Image (spheres, rainbow, N blue to C red):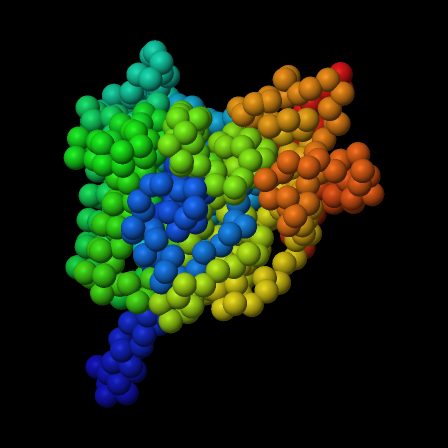
Length: 487
C-alpha cells in the first residue's frame, strides 16, 4: 500500500468513530396503557405510585406536558410512531389488529427504523409489536390460521412481514397481549413461554442488547425501541412486586415497569452510552379501565391526573401521555415544555437530528420537535394535531381549541356515545388553556371556532397529509369524519 493511501486509510479509520459519535444513540421506551397521572413527578398531588426511575429521567431532562399518542389505543399509536403517519389513513378505521394477518405497515413504506438503518444505525425492537404479521409453515410456506382463540402459532413458524422486514435488524418479543406466550425472535417463533408476564423477559433482552452493542461495535449508533407490554392486561406483577405499592395489582405493575426502565438506564450508564444517548419515555395511550380506576381514585390515586377520560376515549385522558426526554448536554435538566406534539413527530425529529431530508412519500403527519429540546419554538408546518378514539371518533386540536366530533367519550368511559344525554350537541369544543379537564362544552356558543377547526381537519384528512408537501393519497376512502348519527 502506498504511503498516501495508508495515510488516507488511517484518517478514515480515525474519522469513522467520530462520525458515529456525532449521531446519538436513540432509546425509545413506550409503556402500554400507562396513564399520564401514573408518573409521580407528573402528578405530585394526586399520584400515589412511586416511579423513581422515570422521575430521575425527568429531573435530568425535559417533560413535555402536552404530548399525545396518535390514538387512544394500541395499534394506531404504534403505526403512527413508526411511520410518522396517522393510522386512520389506512384501512384500520377503528380498534386494533389481532395478528395472523399482513402487516399494517405497507412493505415499501419507510419507517423510523428503516430511515435510521439507512443512516448507519443498528436498529432493534424488544417487546410488543401489535401491527400484525403472518405466521407461515416453515416447510410449505403456507400462511397459518389461528386454530382457536389465543392459540399460539407453532414453534418454528416463520414470519415473512414482521419487524425485521420493516427496518429493524433485530426483534425479540411478541405480537400483542393475546399472543404474549408466543415468543418471536427476528422472523421465527422460538418458544412458547408459560410465563404470562413478559416484562422480565423484555427487561433482560433490552439490557442484553445494550451490553452486546458495547461489545460488538460501540462506535455504531443504535436505535432501541422498547415497547413494554405493561401495565396492560393481564395485570400480573411478578411475586417480588406484589403488594409493593399498597394500592393493588395495577400500581404494583407500574412500579415493576418503572424498575425495568431503570435497568435499561443502568445498562446505558454501565456501558458508557448515557452521555451520547437520547432517551425518550412515554406510553401508547391512557390508563385502561382494567386498572380498576375507581378503586385507585378512592385511595387517592388518579391515573389521568387532571384530565378527563382514559384509554379508548377522545378526551385527553385517552391520548395525552407521559413524554419525557433526556439527552445530556443537549436538553436542559429539569426543564419543561408545554408545546403541542404528537407521537407521529418522532420520524421528522430523527431526520432533523441527523440533518437529513425525510424520504419521499413518508412521514406525512410528522413535524420535528427538536427545537423544543433547545427551549425554542417548534416551527410547525402543520395547523393542528388530529386525535382518534378506539371507535374511530375524530378530534382536532389547534392552539388552545379542541374540537371533538363526538357527543360523549367516543370510547369506553361514561357516557359512551349511545348514552349521551338527550339533546346533547353534535360535538364538543373546549378551551384547553382554561379548561384542560374538558368540562365546559362551548360547541353551541362558539360556532365560528367550530367551523374553523372542522374546515382545517377536513383539509388535513382529505389531503392525505397534515404537513406541507404534495397531496398524498389515503389508503382508505372515503374517511368518515362524523361517526355519531343525529338523534
